Length: 331
Image (cartoon, rainbow, N blue to C red; front, side, top):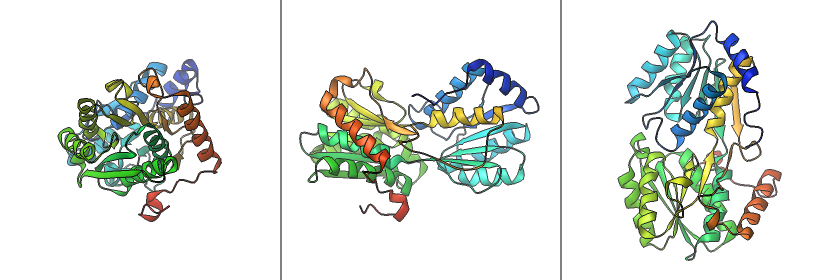
């Protein structure tokens, strides 16, 4: 997308080399799903990889195997002088808060969490806006007027995806049925493809012919179930259209790659700041994926309608309710 990676590689490399002269360099702590989850973590990994390609500055990586290792990894990186340290996911909020207090001179950026400390940047997204778009596309595509949503861990953040999706579907068809299921109540719900497959099959049996998965690695099972049943699926976070071309209707893209890249860039050029950064459609922080893998599924009229809806959300003509504002999907 335009405007995401603005700095020239040469200028950025010079700035980065200077900024990190006294530090060990930038780092990232992924969540337990790992950097190759084909979704949320992998998006961050791609942003880190691009930063290294552009600047020659290597990003130190840590992949915890359990919750206890998250804090251990953060603390070890901070002790060794790594900064900024990008923490991937809301599950790391408590650990980052503890470690950031102990290392006030280290910069931390947490993605999908909010921490009010002078050395922590919190990056959050308007997932409801992107989910509204893919919900609208699902309703445009559905032949049964029934669409499904499979969430990962049952928390307000994931309900936020589901609520936005429901609003988008209802915007296209007020009579649309939106079936929603959550995978579980712990972090393991983001890495359970078998359960994802079971939930998707259950929704197909109830008439759904398009299912959106906001469930990290669990979504892999949803997409396979859709391929097996001859239905459509919608990916999340990264552009997952390539996983099952012709089955993946689109992906609700969340630019966590942009968040990671811009964090390293800002630290290198001295513009990194603490506080909350919110990325929505207007900032190209969320969106829907349209590429060679799915464009045969999207008619010109559908594409035009999607562009119109996006513009209306950005302008405020369409107001998308944020589940997390009220802890309810009332709109």
